[in-house]
Length: 251
Image (cartoon, rainbow, N blue to C red; front, top):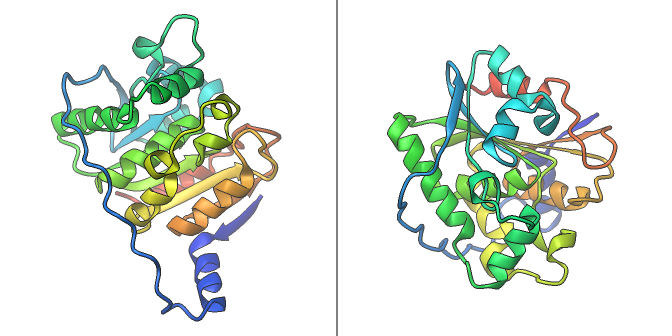
């Protein structure tokens, strides 16, 4: 495994372009967050500081360690509480006969511009109800894309770990015939809003499913610690390092 500090890489790139004092383009304001309606179903297991884990539906995320690469049981053993919710088009929000990422693409193509913002508003409402001013969040694959979005809108997420992250929807096979508008769904717009957090990006050296190079560039933009693992394909190299990283950055 190769571990790099992406912030150091980014500063080096800035220096090569005229020094760390070079002007970074100011990003436009984020779209308005919709008001949460009925709060979504969620589940919390364990005790201790809350870590939100987003992967697929909440039941599979919390209880199927194959989905999370044993991240959830390791978090529990380390003394954290783990909370999860169904991602859009998963669990209670699934559409029969439609694969979840195809559902994402179809809903967006049909005009649902707030598909992820509505999820984030619900998540924020749940955390408000739990009285959780600061939490950690771990996003896995597609869950990492959602974690990027929610993290940009709410500074209570102090530690943000992105495992094998989707950082560009248009790179995914499911979006080739229905590409999204990058100005609405691109992750570049979120980078300035989470660059002041403690963040981690972990991905295999040759993940063609979500694009290793894309994840590396994203890590550089947000100043994340970058770990390039020896995992084969689109798999988590879960050796406990994510939990060790969280423990080193208490929130």
